[in-house]
Length: 396
Image (cartoon, rainbow, N blue to C red; front, side, top):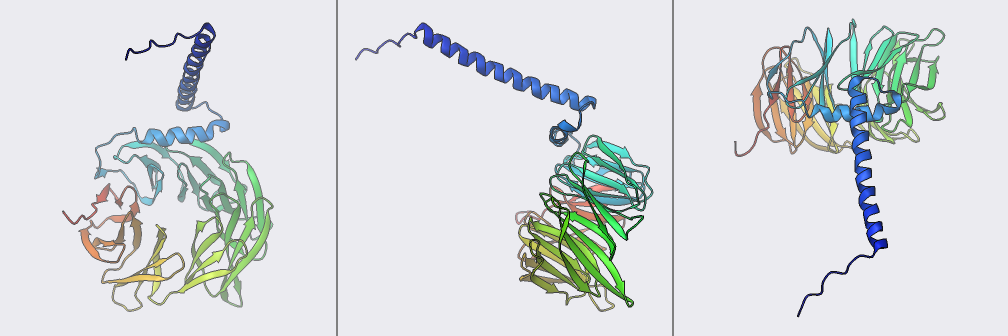
């Protein structure tokens, strides 16, 4: 059978086809122009707040393009303060500077903060750094300082939500304390004032719909905790959670409407919509030293009540149903979940467990170890270096 020759396009069809090709080419040129312009605007530092999200995106992407020699690598920490993961970046805070590192160990950016008591908190693409008991606060990404903020009163605590809203707890001239919430452009959203107790910490839900404020109150020599949940859109208090004779150690949002509050005597799972306690876990293994929440699990380490330096590690689901316990003779100062492994920092070694509680490895550490962190695996932070704790494999 002879093959039919292809049909010739009419002039109208050919014109329509050429217009489509020209349109696609024009769209590609426009898109390329936007990307190149945004990149040039970003690296030259002249972009405004309207491009902040694009700047964060570019900054996060550029981190992967910073190639180092891998782990371990040397650092020049004067006095180590804190380390936090910020998406693709690792933030290391010392007495002089805040440095940002890429996954392969390249220093991306370093900011000399000139703060006496610096503290940081991170989201996926930003970090807030503030001077405790002073008024200075700054927000940065992995390549530059985005915003500078001078508060009217001394800062007690600051934190970032996942969508880059900032909650700042400060002292107050007329009240016991106050909390200001800023959006991602550092425009003030609400100010919450407290005259009944003393605000110490404030946290925003992932989408910044709710604000949780931890407060302390003394009554007849007794220490009580009040945790307020505030509607950010309305600026009104939804409810308050009270705990007699205990202080708050930390608060974590596990969902937009669920909070875990870690007290000195117990942990509770709270419905953030009505304030009801869904579950609670009373500590029976000692004093809470560290905790982590990942992969639908809560891990807590407790120091023993005896004089012997020993610890108990407890792993539960998000409803505090115990999965297993681990007893170790070391005094465990930090625990993290990283991938399918549990890492526990002791004075002599980092212990490595499976998510079923089976001990599979133990890595000796140097005397000047400061912290361990979940950053592309387990990173050990020393005073002079950042080392990777190699993940144990059955075939190793």
